[in-house]
Image 1 (cartoon, rainbow, N blue to C red):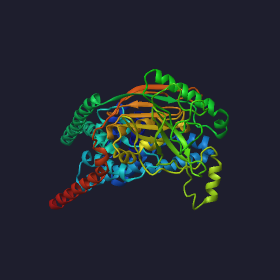
Image 2 (image 1 turned 60 degrees about the vertical axis):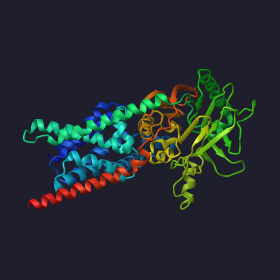
Image 3 (image 1 turned 45 degrees about the horizontal axis):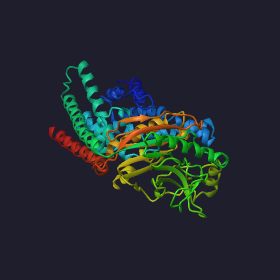
Image 4 (image 1 turned 90 degrees about the vertical axis):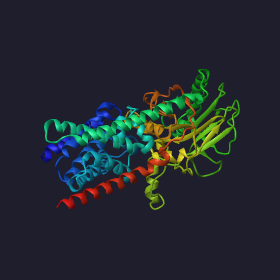
Length: 515
């Protein structure tokens, strides 16, 4: 296959991945999206395979993260040329992940006679785990709605799902090649198909077990208030804070009348600074009172500080039914340039100039790590903003044995773009990995309620900052189930790397003995 045709194949795979991924979610395409790329890898050098994989990755990243242009325009106020350069540079770097596993797979195929059906799935697990992402994503996200397929995430996290997706695509590519080349008997393809089917079947057995445990667990009715108000400026907080809070209170009261036992407000939805010294919510009649005519539990996001102190933290605050502050969690994984300026200690003048462009985003002090918030039977594992798309952070949280995962996020930065849909898809894998239901409350959408099998049962849509709250209601299980991923998934990339090394050495020894 000539280089131009190979590039066309690689780009075609990139486009198909984009169509399968959120927000389009044409997920059946995920099982054949990589077929053109895998076909182009046949009988090419490892260098060309790396390049073709990089081309495919470039198409995926440029198309998937074009919301960067919008964010930098509206919040960074930078020129179009600068925005395009940032997108291209970030995409070119992240495209190396695809290029890496393609190059390694072909190298092992040529040097160690290791079939692509074996090397590619193992290599993608190593690549996605070894190379740090600027904007996290993984190939498994293209089949996130195919919940029977993503059950393997409990064993190896999102990288395991990516490996399964690559295996299925390699099997299909091999079967298609066999139809046009009779001399290439698809024995490896049949074995690969059997492995893929076995993984899915075992995942379904485990899913049935989890579903049975979930049906027997205590259930709680939860309500989400999505204020559709976005990020409030300092002036808006000063002049309209009480009005904003009144809308949140009214929506909470309405959810309580519908039976909600737990109500969740999104990240930094409380329009004022919340005093960390408070042990009870504000008294009746106070303009900042959180609840009226609602006797359930409230979890809300707020910027918190100690009275008279200089530090601000991005927190999730839990109010028990009796009005006491039952617990507080401070966001650990901070957002660069949104909550802090990198290298501010080394370049204070530059940091001050950057911060001056974002007057409504104060510097935030990070928390000390994951924490469990408890009120009665509730054992909530709180997550703020993009912490729910970071498997390592949620793995640490899982060791606190939460019964429910709850995300508080403010996606107003990305409203109208693909980012909120992508965040929902990426976060859904945390449900499978931890075997916990997941509630996601966002400021402008997408809010959702999902179960421990990765199925989303209720969700909202994105809305501009119109100031009219929207509510979402559902029932979740308080699960106390052992899950493998927090303990096993960190070791999967190492296991795959060792397996590749052993198989490669065996192939090299066999090849040398034939000479």
